Amino acid sequence: MFRYDAGKDGFIDLMELKLMMEKLGASQTHLGLKNMIKEVDEDFDGKLSFREFLLIFRKAAAGELHEDSGLHALARLSEIDVSTEGVKGAKSFFEAKVQAINEASRFEEEIKAEQEEKKKQAEEMKQRKAAFKELQSAFKQ
Image 1 (cartoon, rainbow, N blue to C red):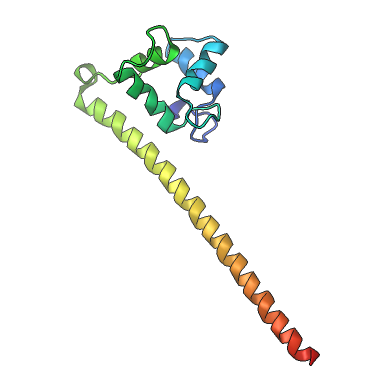
Image 2 (tube, rainbow, N blue to C red):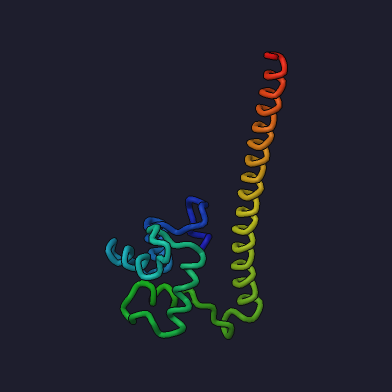
């Protein structure tokens, strides 16, 4: 999935999905692509997150995808066949998935740290203003 994330934002948008489907040899119409996203877009943002991308395979495994849907074609094209790829090929596939999840988690941690730093700076600024007002009131008396 992330190989096709041209924007490197952790999501597959409509144009990236179009390119991915073309490269996989299962081109779709514009409407077909929109329907593919709509079918698994849990947060209604119009693009596929990693979680939503994995939902395609869960639905395919559960038989919840129509045979003629683009998602069914994508799931079929993206399957890992251990008998042909071997255990090492499957291992590499899943390690890449885990690495992508870890990178997303690391990014979230960086954002949280940045937010905490901003809160800390805001609190320090508030304390400095309070201390300044206290000194200022001492000079007024």
